[in-house]
Structures are given as structure tokens and as C-alpha cells.
Amino acid sequence: MEKLIKGFELFRKVTYPTKQRLFKKLASAQAPHTLVITCADSRVVPEYFTSSDPGQLFVVRNVGNIVPPYAQFTGGVSAAIEYAVVALGVKDIVICGHSDCGAMKATLNPASVSEMQAVAAWLRHAEVAKHVLDENYTLDSNASRLYALTEENVIAQLDHLRTHPSVAARIASGKLGIHGWIYDIETADIRVFDPDERKFVTLEIQDDTITAKLPVAAADALAEGKRRPSTAASRANGIRAVVYAGTDL
Ligand SMILES: [Zn+2]
Image (cartoon, rainbow, N blue to C red; front, side, top):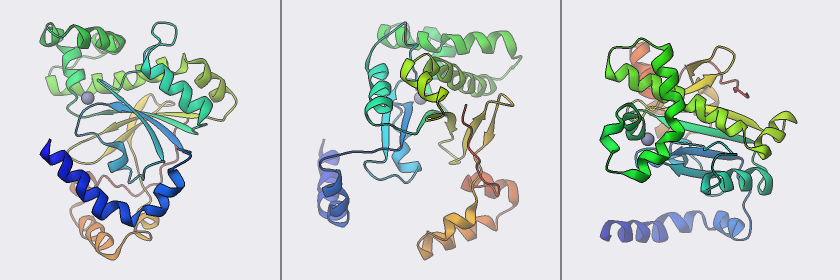
């Protein structure tokens, strides 16, 4: 608890004074542009890896970045989706899975959560991805199976997301885009689902537009990173040279 309170103290004394205008603006209204549905895993912090301020992302986190199908289960996730879409009018929804996901490991090995009934029941919403994996992939290593399941789970949850009436209506009218991402904790890569190819591709960023906005030290660090051998550099920085064109489904 001490760490938490010290952290709050640091926020109050250092961060808050520099962002007072923002907090004043946010005191009476919010207008987030994106709903992010991601895992509760402590290593996955969408505001952090998208450099977002308070007020920009509406974030829902749960074990396994799951979206229960609308007709099957009405709970906190469904309510948050409806609120973000109808009341707040978010323009995009991102379902973000991640590397080394404990929920995906448990889906591969249900015995590991046999004594956690709530977790096991919740993970049934990811069962569809496990079936896709079992019937369509021939993978030997646990790492490849975990990787493939993580991808199939994001695809399955995108399918579930489309069963929500508020989402389906706005996709149909072109007012909402839905996207599948997988965040790599170690390399800071993001892989994006391309629905046309039905595969995930690395999120590619036009880095000159980024460097133009960076403080000098950060731009130097980025340039230094780019001088590494090409594959290692792109994996280390999570940055490739092509523009991300979006993947509205
Ligand atoms: Zn996870």
C-alpha cells in the first residue's frame, strides 16, 4: 500500500500541476475517441503504450480481453460497450490481446484453473478460439500454440463484439471501426488483424511524423535505435517504415 500512496503523492506534486488545464477541462465532461478492451494483466497498459492522456481512451479490462456475445451474457463488459458507443460516441473499438497471456495459457490448459471456478467459467467465452486452433492448426510447440490461440481469441472476440446491437448498427452506418490488436510486452510491437487476409500484421508507423513531435532526446534515441541491424531494430522499437492504414472491419 505504501508504494501506491507514494505514487499518488508523486502524481499530485509532479504530474498534476503540469496538466492542471487538462484536468479542469475533464472535470465536467469526457469525449474519448476509442474504446479499448484489453486484458487485466498488469503489464498491459493501453494508456501507457499509446501515449494517451486521461480522457482519450475508454478502457475496459478483464481476464483474457473477452467480449461475451450479447445474447448470452449481459454484464459489465456489455454495459461498458453500450455506454462507450451510444453515450460517448467513440469512433473506434480496439480489442487488444497480448503476449504471454495467462488467460490464454489457462484456455490451453483448463486443468490449471480447475480450482478457480469464476475464471474457468469466464474463459468459456474464449473456448471458440481453442476449437479453431484444434481443428485448423498443426502446431507442436506450446509457444506457437499460445501465439495462435492469442490471435484466434482476438478474432473470436471481434465476432462477439459484432453481436452487440449498438456496435452492429454503427458499423453498418460507417460511424464505428473495430480493430484487433496484439501487444508484445517484450518488444513493444503491436500486431494488427487484417480481415481481408485473415492474418495479423505488424502495425507500421510513419516514423518521420512521430519524430517531428518528439522532444530532442527521444528523437535522438529513436534515431539511435534505427541504426541497429534492420530486423533487430524494428523488433526492438516496434516501428516499421510503412504507414498504418487502419483495418476497419
Ligand atoms: Zn492476459
